[in-house]
Image (cartoon, rainbow, N blue to C red; front, top):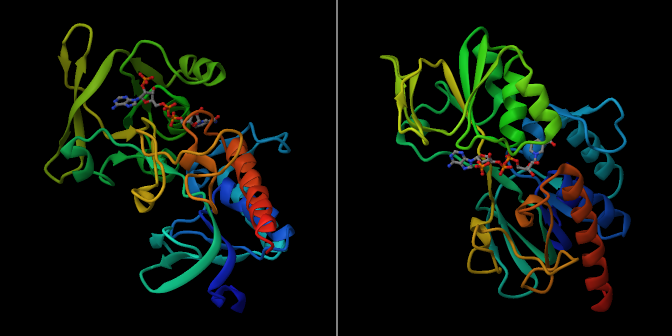
Length: 317
Ligand code: NAP
C-alpha cells in the first residue's frame, strides 16, 4: 500500500473489490481520478468462493474465481488505484463531500462514491443452522468441501449456486443430495444436465429442511425434512449441509440514506448507475436483482466510473 492511500480528500471512493469495484477502479484510474478502493476485510467478493468460471469472456479454458479477481486487481494496480483493506463502518451521504469511515477510525471525504458492496449468502433461518455453522453447516462449498471427504452431504437450493456447489462437493463427498423446495431446478440447463447425470448425486424434490440435528459433540448428525406435497417427515443421517439459497445485498450502511427496493437492493436509474443521491453510484450485485453475473457486475462497474467522470466534468472538476 503506497502513501497515497493516506490522502483523505478524494475525487472518487469505491467501496467493494469484486468485479464491479475492480472494473470501476480500472476505468476511474485511467480517467486520472486516482480512485481509492476500500476492499473490505474479506476482499474479492463472491468470486473468491467460486471455483470454475467458464462464462467470463477471454478465458477459453475457464478460470478459477480467485484467479480472475487477482488478475483484475493487478490490472487496477497497474494504473493509479489506491487500495485500502478495511471495512466501511459508517457513511454520511447527507452532504458533499460524502463522509466515509473505515474500521471506525479513518475518515475519508469523497466528491463521488461508487458502491460495489455486493451481496452475501442467505441462510434458512433455523436456530440449529447458525449454531452449527462451521460444525457441519456451511454456506460455501469451495471453502469447506475439503472437510467432507467420503462423507454424506446435502445441499439446499435449486439455483446455479446450489447445483454448482453440489457438483463441486462430489469431488470429496461419497454422496451429495440436493434438497429443493420445488420439483424443477432454476439452475442453467448445462449445470442441471451435469448434476442429474452425476453418479454421486441424488435429489429430494418438493422438500424443505425443518431442522438440523447434532451429535453429542455439537456436529451435524442428521436432518429433519418435510415433503411439501405429502407432508411426510423424514430424518436422514447427514455429515454436512450446505445452504445455497441465494443472496442478500450488503446495504445496511445505506439504509435511510439511499433509495432501496423491497429486498434492500440499491435502486439505480434505468440504463445508468445513478442512485437517488447525486454523486453516489452503484454497480454490481448490490443493485442487480436480475443478471447477477461476474461479467454484468464488471460491466456496471465500468458504467459507474464513466458516470462519475461525466458527473465531475459537469461540475468542472
Ligand atoms: P437463485 O438463482 O436466487 O436461487 C436460489 C435457490 O434457492 C432457488 O432455487 C430457490 O428456490 C431456493 N430458495 C430460496 N429461498 C429458499 C428457502 N428459504 N428455502 C429453500 N430454498 C430456497 O440464487 P443463486 O443460485 O445463488 O444464483 C444467484 C445468481 O448468480 C443467479 O443469477 C445465477 O445465475 C448466478 N450464478 C451463476 C453461476 C454460473 O454461471 N456459474 C454460478 C452461481 C450463481 P425456487 O427455485 O423455488 O425459488
